[in-house]
Length: 348
Ligand code: AOF
Ligand code: ZN
Image (cartoon, rainbow, N blue to C red; front, side, top):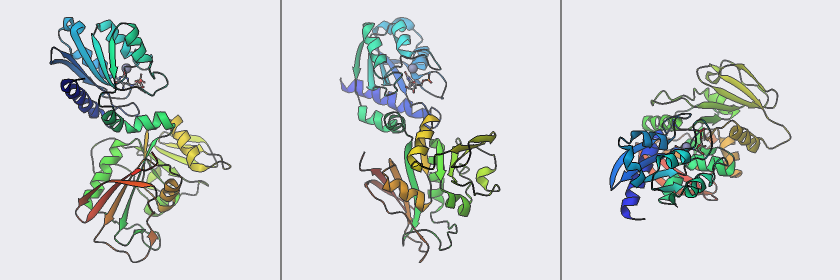
């Protein structure tokens, strides 16, 4: 592969990223078609349920007679299954393209190698693995979902300079500043779901919406084992979907409210994530409280963690913030008086 090949694949990855927040739970995929060092077609998977990247790219080519001398760069192995759209591998074959360069192979059991095989059997040359690390990072949610059969789990909390997450009576205290709050709302638009534990739902009465950033409102998930949370909480206002994990009942009484029952004899969190996998939820942002975050940290059930530490605020007493275990510090940034630490799970 030459540096020009790398450049076109970078462009395809850049296009793929335009589907952030809208392609999910599908992966973000980009496609670039090149003839004699000129890009003649581009596309990306814009919307879940909509046409795949290759379809948009082929449609964008004005002079289709150039396709037999063209090279296709696509960030994910072209699909081989009849899903919401016909197989992209067949589209590329019928378009008569010369060769195909793929960034990542598709772990989806419906595809996993069959797309590439199909292209090769039709006489199209295929090369894989170009900028694979970048592709894996871009679609980390999708790859984790497919490989571990659970959503990609992101933990987030804010703590004071002296390590507290809430006041002594569990009362809600605004710890991080305005910039941090906007950033969190942006993150919410990028994930499919937000989750909190019972005590946070009760004491904070959070909206778990995205009012400080344009974008979609994610699914709200709350754990309420014995269904003790009062109905007047914002979580149950019907303004966006809420999923309540509990031990008592399974039903959907209203459009935006679903009760999902878990088995009391089995570990709660693995069960819950298995259920979310079945519901096709690709990623979850866990926003508290301490008990839930610590359980996830201790069970190694997480992929990334974001911790805001407000260096200008102390509480003196209260609920201690979770203790990071198994974290690999990847980055730190400053937002006013907030320090943001980003961790990856060391064991992954
Ligand atoms: C491609 N190009 O742009 C994407 C692909 O439900 P469907 O029919 O949209 O299929 C979704 C699956 O297709 C998804 O899980 C992944 O395996 C593959 N995504 N494939 O050739 C694309 N987005
Ligand atoms: Zn496809």
